[in-house]
Amino acid sequence: MDKTELAEIDMKLPLMENFYTVQGEGFHSGKAAYFIRLAGCDVGCTWCDVKESWNAGDHEFVAVSDMIAMAQESTSKMVVITGGEPLMYDLEVLTIALKIHGFNTHLETSGAYKLTGVWDWICLSPKKFKQPLPEVFQSADELKVIVFNKHDFKWGEQMAAKVSTGCKLYLQPEWSKADEMLPQIIAYVKNNPRWEISLQVHKFMNIP
Image (cartoon, rainbow, N blue to C red; front, side, top):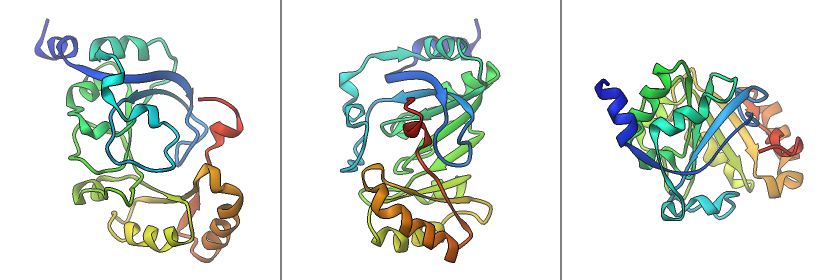
């Protein structure tokens, strides 16, 4: 047994839930994906729809090797690590193990913590409550700004000024405000076509 295999067994992370579904947001929307949702978050979004993920102590700490075995039960090679805020933990062992087993690694993060891990795709969804570190801005493949009110358009432009030129830009209505904000997002994208619209299509399909 090599060092990587030993690390997989020894390292445990707080797992809130894991499930096989279809990615419902952003650039990879519509693709089959296996999700690993890690518990623990101190960013504190008032409109968060998974507040039960905030306290890591409420959830079981699971060995990386067990997470890999669970992911292998799916037929997709896309694994999305989300939270909570997954970058609260060192994700090097988990992502290397996933890569060794043939998975593509996708991260969903607020960017508020140091970037660790080996990634094929990084979705940065910045929050005003605890803004991203500069290194995460520059590593992002996708910037997803949640629009809760009209002031978020200006804030989104401030965030977009910090990412690399190749980063995809998305505006996504906060689910409870979609009826109010989506018409404004549509108008904004028509006037600023470098932005695209992301919708939480998994909620329309009534899947996780």
